[in-house]
Length: 461
Image (tube, rainbow, N blue to C red; front, side, top):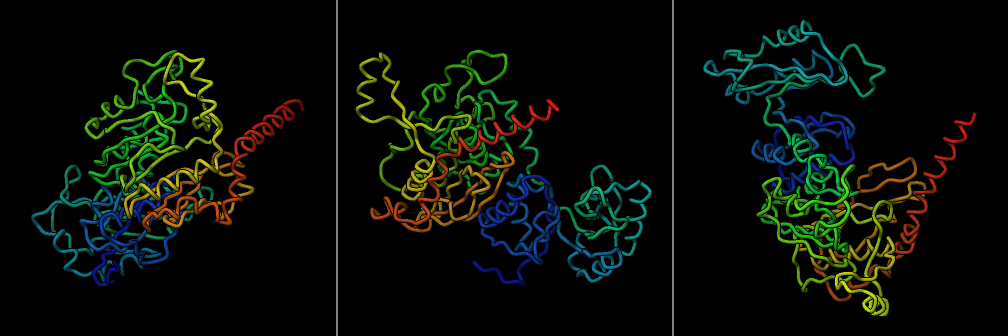
């Protein structure tokens, strides 16, 4: 839905300086979740911590901040400029009816100063606050519990080795809300009962849920659920969660522990216990032992979002159940009916099976969010798996090493799945180039081996 420029209001977004590529897709996804459309007043400086956004309402701005882990705070922007003179001129031109409700004599306020890439003395801060005496503040200053908080924000650039005397950009605005950065600490994997070798970082888990536009009462599925870390972030946002995994012991919380100085997993180390730890057990549907290459679900659009981190063959093996012949041979030797033969599952097949599953089982408008490992010297956007029912929304890189990375891919279902779409990817010219990812593990460890050899050679000098 296009938004008329007249209905948009300017806000300043203060962002955290980490996961830079992930910030814009998170903001655009969340705005669309609340019925808005991303629109910027100026060209977004992608790596900057300061973005000026056009947002239809304060309610939508607050909704954004109730979800984002990439942004710290948002402000109603009253003025900005490239110098103090420009800032003051901008403030003097700010509509009085916009400011007066927050400057009344019966209100309390304080002014806070935030500088990026420079530290100011207290005397310098006071001088900057005093310079705003031309604004019609009529209320009383209250530093501990003010009704309204105003911020002066100054941007001294991105180079810590070359800090200018004067800021490149200055902003003044009324504080609206803070983001959800505290979730990163409160949901830290270090505090979690049940973890594995590849448990997802809490910040990235919430970013994935936001890219997937997970909302209350959604049904979210993870076909490579592992210890269930990705279910937690979706459940936090009110979605009902479920998953499958080929590993019987992981699903049931059995076997060797992943923590140092702990040999076996305890009775409270399982996926359900993880959600119970955060008061989210009511959102847990179940986790099943299943092979993602052989879906167990009835036909139909079942899931609002599929959010997953498939195995790359580095710390977790890429496996699927073996052929019927192999399974028969295994059953003759085994007394445990939950043990089955597993065979290699090529990376290319993992991702094309995943896209095919998403195309068939996602609701219309539902999103698939997953990690794709890449060998950087050979990467081009052409190798990203595609499906005619899915539209690519975003593609963000996280470095793993100098030569490898993984890309967070977000896709949206835009076309109803038909039988002819079953194997459509095999006709696509870009299917064969992605076959190269089957050797990702060898390429990953070849780089590690070369680095170790270089370090040993350097140490001998």
